[in-house]
Amino acid sequence: MLCIKPRLTATLAVAAIALAGCASGPDIRADYDKAADFGKYRTYGFVAQAGTDSGDFRSLSTQMLQNAAARQMEQRGYTRAENPDLVINFKGKLEEKVDVESTPAPYYGPGWGYGGWYGAPYGGWGGTEVTTRRYNVGTLVIDVVDREKRQVVFQGAISGVVTKEMQQNREASINRAVEGIFMQYPFVAGQTAPVPLPEKK
Image (cartoon, rainbow, N blue to C red; front, side, top):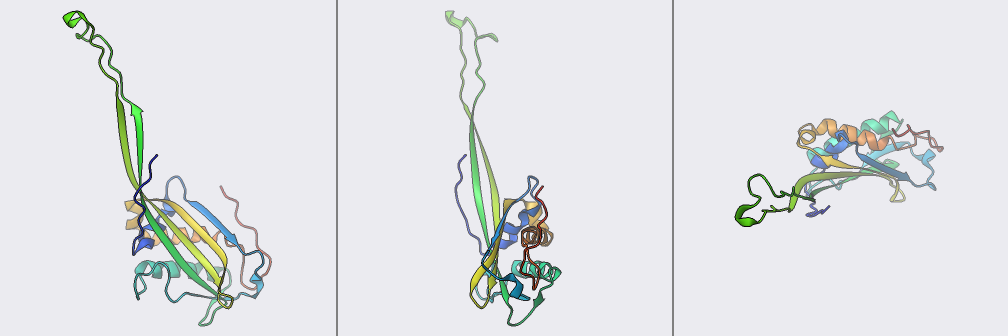
């Protein structure tokens, strides 16, 4: 397998987060700071400029990401505030990959009217068939940061193949991706001890 042409896009979240509906299932990974006191966190907000923004404006994808994350945080009892305990940032990446596979081509032996021509059998030929497949892989990373300490206390990432259908339904795909990451966030507002996470299927 050959992978080439990594590419960052200005609106990388648009496609990168559309991977939650991947047929084979996205890859989700997450971890949190075991030394952090999550019991003191009760409010949340967002960084002034997310990693998914381009220039000085907030992209449409970032707005969708913030809306999805806000629902997840409020389901866990957090309240949005001007000077929050936690701030959330998003980063994304879209990579074009190329898979090249080589397989032996069929060998055509003597026969089929060729054998014996001019006194010698025609042995045919074997070769190599090359198949090339191009596809996009998107990755979304969510950082939950202790605003006072300026330290990441939770980080989750989701990665998978991005299809055109997912990009066409990006808001629904964004919601699924953000929900998938927050399913690995083991805390509720004001509670120090982590809560049980759903078992991975």
